[in-house]
Length: 128
Image (spheres, rainbow, N blue to C red):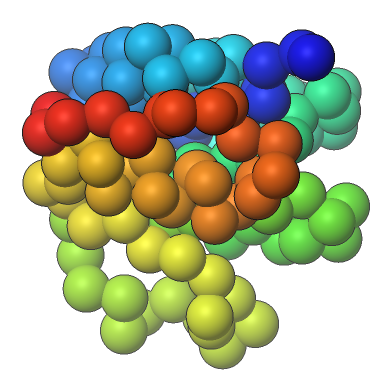
């Protein structure tokens, strides 16, 4: 069974590496990470991702055009942010939000909620 592929859009290198490490250790395939809106749109357009984690603000640009593109394609996604969720546009209400700082177990719980049965077995993880 192929590993679920998750697009990571994150402009902070340390957080991107943390996400990538936790996900790889848990059996996910990481697409990216990418740190710009334009790169995210290209990656989404290329297809092949099962889910996405989107930093809300990448290099000063809101990620919402990428979120809309994922939604239009039926690809599940979650926002990753250090802000509160109050500013997320209404069309994305109800989407999971992973607040920074986060623990590995929280990240993996969000991924399982996005991908469901396609999630790696036993991908629990500890604190991260």
